Image (cartoon, rainbow, N blue to C red):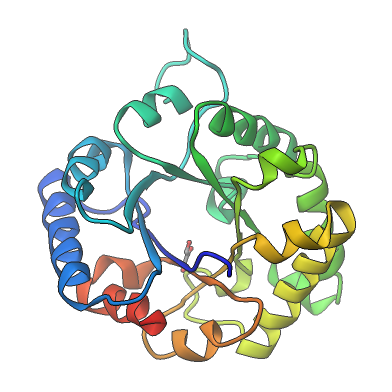
Length: 254
Ligand code: 3PY
């Protein structure tokens, strides 16, 4: 059976105290209410990582991730943070290729492929995001776009390396817009991604890869989305900033 994961993407929100306090709330609620085997990963701004990774210790199934890394090992890269530095905080995951980073910070497939390598080299699990814009969906080119993002960003990995990757399908038109892909639209793309993995690697690897849905996922739409056969959880934006909403989404897998 594939790992079910509900990951929170806090984006650039919360000061340090607020981050620690929200994380503590989430951990306590998870301890009290979550009875399934789903994993929770909170991807926070860098400033919280060390503190919340400490708080996560001793709570099985709760992990911490970053939202970006730089691909170089160390050196004169003012303002950047390496994979090794993130790993040293106790974080285990990192979101890579989020559409906000692709759009606002010019991260292209080549840069992302180097970030994926750096993450894996230092034992971080990449949550690698792919997804089409509204224009690309409306023109019917979305399979082509997703195929290209996979090919250029992540298909250079060996079978062995790929086993440590989580994918997230996040249609750009559903991010920060309140629009969500319907369960059928999301399932169609998730099935396409899984078939593409089977063609590139093999069926076992495709069947074992966790593919999350992201884009305005909330406690109302999560049950229908997560009941689709190829959707293994979610990457949650706004709703991950509210402990009740986030934990209700996690509990869809109870
Ligand atoms: C959203 O739901 O808005 C996201 O971007 C999740 O990563």
